[in-house]
Length: 438
Ligand SMILES: Nc1ncnc2c1ncn2[C@@H]1O[C@H](COP(=O)(O)OP(=O)(O)OP(=O)(O)O)[C@@H](O)[C@H]1O
Ligand SMILES: [Mg+2]
Image (tube, rainbow, N blue to C red; front, top):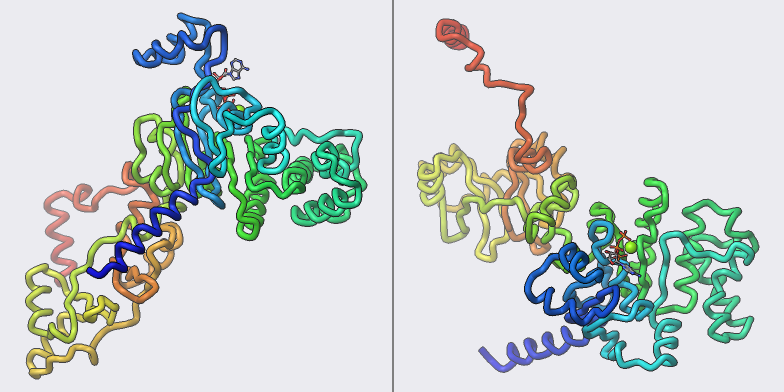
């Protein structure tokens, strides 16, 4: 290896460091009298409920650590009381942590004096609340510019910023209405516009969509994702809804009793739940929407041209008991499927090049394709779906049975059908055989 490889590696490590925008380490929040005496009990492994009984203190957050990258949507999820709101409120110290490290963009939030904390809340992070938190007697535009007004921004500037934020969330034309005149979904758009008006780097969204009807909620999720594609804010998004978390999160942290139980991509969380608690959470999700082709594909049998010809192919197929084999070139670029009868014919004619007889009427998909999207194709296709990367290299294949098992779920036992044989008596079986053969 030359020195170039080492250099690249160093750069990656450095940029990784820069990327971590929000950092929380060993964070605790104990509510109640004399929180300090709770630490030894936590160290002993006492549960949240045992500690409450013993000390009257509630463990809000128990040794939470995570890092959020710039531009990432980081979802915190967990059941009611698991500490989600406490975590997000500790980030801007609306709740004073009992212990731990909080860094935003390399700055130690715990060491900030009241003035710089205020500045940080106004300029760096904005919050969007579950129940919108709009002021009923202010017009929409005056609600949106409220934060800027408090921060002393002049009327012209703040009005311009408020109007462009309203346009961003699709509420142009509503600026002079009042919150009560708007639907829930629109009110939450105003909440979002208010948070965006100061152009913060971080959006803190605590159950921001939970009060909305399912359809409106789904729309808001789509709109947030669309906005995020152009805004690239760093978003900490709290929800107790797993489907919402999977849809909008780049990564998800799962909390229970104040502890972070698992952090991972939606795919990680679904395929490899860290413990029973997480597993129970994910059991009811439609996995096929998030699982990718890559996670269910299998390695096909292949031959490589030009080094392999019909002899090698026939031998390999005979050995595996299969009637076809996948053909790739030296770069693993996919060439097609070779049928055994064609290979045998070539063998007889003494032709070594298999390219002329390859079957190429196959379906292909890229590794990120959700399993659900493969279903209809898998049902009608004659051969497995080839999974190819962007260089057309064969990464694997997915057959009908695997897709079905994934979409229906392995633990779903099909009780509506039984094998025909089980229904037939021995004599009937003989009859059937006669019919079939005669
Ligand atoms: N001000 C407070 N005083 C005492 N205990 C509190 C306070 N705020 C929160 N807690 C406790 O801390 C724990 C975490 O609460 P938190 O509000 O963070 O949960 P959550 O995950 O946001 O729940 P939800 O989904 O219901 O909003 C709970 O046991 C709660 O009772
Ligand atoms: Mg909460």
